Image (cartoon, rainbow, N blue to C red; front, side):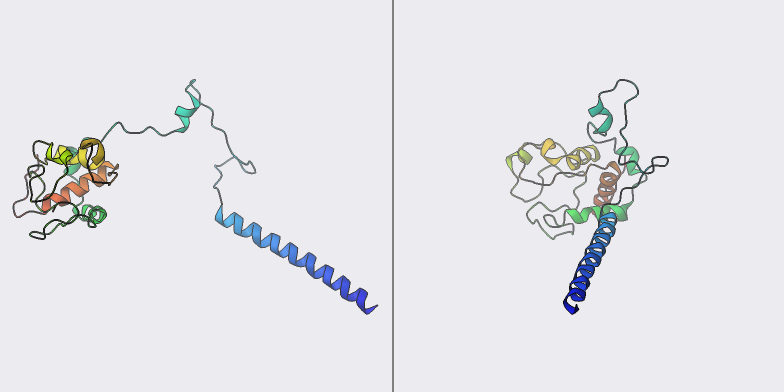
Length: 185
């Protein structure tokens, strides 16, 4: 009789433990993978959006990629230099920003705005040596958007800065890194 009671207790404890484990797992899964449902679709697993004008479903689902960098000059008027300094932290592993600090893996970026391309003492790749002109605002905008597209064959592995505001802020910050900052157009 005592063994029967012990067996029943073991079975009850196992059932309670399994139930508790299932409940905790459900709560954890809900917390980790919670998906906000739009209003009016309570209880549905997902909503399928259907294009209304015969547009291809793949086109409707994918956000449009910008064809290139946006116009930078209007953004420079309202650019935030402090935000640009924050964006520049992506570059400090390879570039110096202080006057006289010299180059690191990449060339020194002090006084880069309106400087001749490949214009400091640095071992530039042939891709950069082939570039003509100065690092004006438009050139910096296009380069910072996609360095490998601007200078095909560059050794620089940085993918670029896709947000127009971030590029404008960075360029505005780079402009301040000079004894005589380049005038804004």
